[in-house]
Image 1: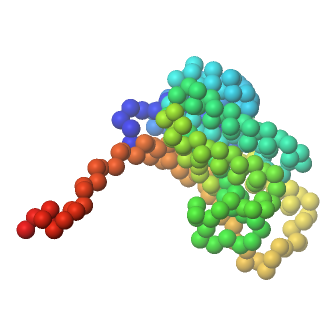
Image 2: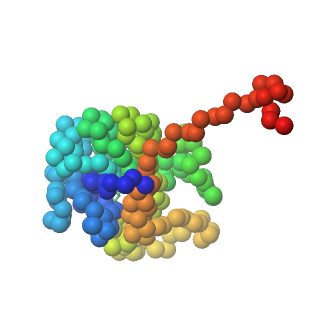
Image 3: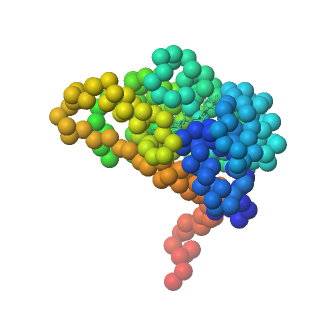
Length: 242
Ligand code: NAD
């Protein structure tokens, strides 16, 4: 872990997960700013802007003195227009990377999604060795995979070190998607439908734990120390001590 404390910049910090990350950073006494298109809270410095604009992001990074970006922003899944996902998730994430590299930010933690490896078939014990889906289910999933790939590829650019986390479903206080969807189904009287034979499993993680994972990932993001020099192997028998 680095000895000096990071200065955090949470993109999407007005959102469900972003807010929990901000609250946990504040609770442990860290310096944190929020960057978002909407302001919902007033307990941190706030930078209003669209992350697809590299200059706006870079300006806010400079002003806030950021050393660590936690990028959680995305349009919600399930929107009818696929273009918004490519604009925000792919081009926007590339703009964030470019702004981070240009301003010398050291760390970038990206909220990806478990859906980047999902093609509609069951996945058990899947881990990061699984390739991205060849046929992503929709534009949201495809754009999250492309954004994640760009973040990981940016590792080591001008000293930037990056990591991506892939939560599946997230639940907890402040959620506007998962429970809303379930209540919608209930309100419409659609509860008599069942998909599968009632043995289907899906991963849900409590939002506080997903937020904690982001803080831990940020804490652990350090440039690996240089490998120790490799000692020369003996070239003849006389080199080997008796
Ligand atoms: P959310 O909609 O509550 O929050 C997203 C925030 O990003 C919002 O405050 C929004 O205003 C902001 N934002 C959107 N576009 C922006 C832009 N162009 N510039 C700046 N800010 C912008 O979403 P959430 O549920 O907190 O999800 C956070 C992250 O977690 C997303 O990246 C999402 O893909 C991922 N994720 C969520 C779930 C889930 O179940 N909620 C599951 C897996 C992955």
